[in-house]
Amino acid sequence: MYKILYNITISFIASALPVVGLFSSKVKRFISARAKTNIPTKGNVSFWIHCASLGEYEMAIPLIHELLKSHSLNDILITFFSPSGYEQVKNGPYASRMMYLPIDTPKNVKQFYNNYNPNKAIFIRYDFWHNYIRFGMKEGTQFYLVNGRFQPNHFIFKLIGKNYLNIIRDFKYLFTSDKASCELLKKFNENTLFVGDTRYDRVADISKTDNEYPDIHHFKGERKLLIVGSSWEKEEALTKKLLDTNPGLAVIIAPHDIQRTEQILKVFKSHSPRRYTHADFDEKTSVIVLDTIGMLSSLYSYADFSLIGGGFHGALHNIIEPAVWGNHISFGSKIQKFPEAHDAIEYGFGFAITHEDLWIEMINDLIQNHQKLLEVKEKSKKFVANQQQATRKIAKHILH
Image 1 (tube, one colour):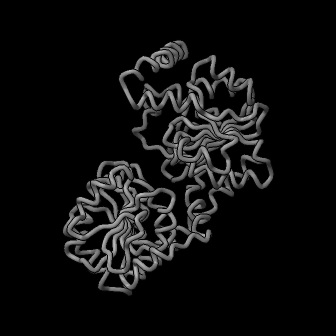
Image 2: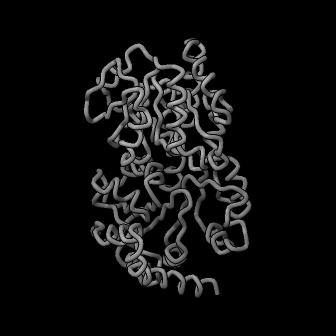
Image 3: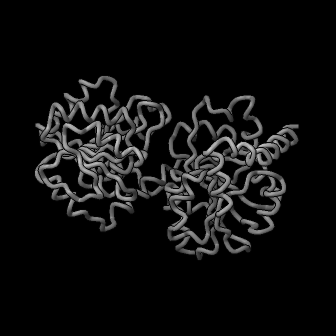
């Protein structure tokens, strides 16, 4: 009964999207982007890796690197659901093997398997598609979950998610990024393993690349540097309040949406902010607004402090990227779904902001106490080093 209702619903959605696109610019972009998608060369593939969006793709990269040690790129197919993922990496090194995943209708699914017939399917985090998985299992495809992370209140553990829970039971392996998720899922699939988060391997790889920015080094000078990563209005307002108390601090703001650059420049007007791309800043400049993409993960190497966006509304962005460089990391307090934030707090290099004045007092204290700040930064580096090797453990089972 569920399968019938699901197929009716998904087919209706697929046929209704063009109509909805007439009234919704977001849906229109969704449709137009998919119409321009790359179509990888057809043929049987060894590994199909599905990523919902950019965050999941970042988790998949270390595993892709590992698979390419023993297989060619043509053995791999990478699919996306969201334009926010595909559009940002479609010109990257794996572009020829990337595509949007067609909507989960029976017709699309059958055509997909006719074209690529994957031997093993690797789903990152939890973007499950009922028809793709069930049809694939009948065709002999083995399914794996990587970086799985679930809470007891997740919908799959409720009546409405029963069919998806049954799907998970039939996965070859479930690899989780935290122990709590492993304990939850092991009740339903004995091949559940806690291996850690592949993002730690990803940031470790990034930290080994030679991405230096002499202009940022000159800008920082002898000052302490705060980077506000993937910021929203709340983090920016808080940074402005901090800077008003300590004008000797150097600040780089990397907004979640660079289209907001002008708005941010107005917020910090009293501190004479500069756009990064204008290159008109020096060691006397207080604030730079990063109006470009692709630099942030490397810029954290210059930071002493990082304030990561999203934590004030329950959608915390990546805190692992600054952690690998030994940053003191702060974020909003709505972090229930982010075990890495709880780990950062427990190990002494993370701070959840519940009171603005206390946070400002703490940052200013660390600026004055150089030795104490060094100790915090060392904790951050050591923690990330101890979390690596998840990718190797996963690949060992998938390639077996």
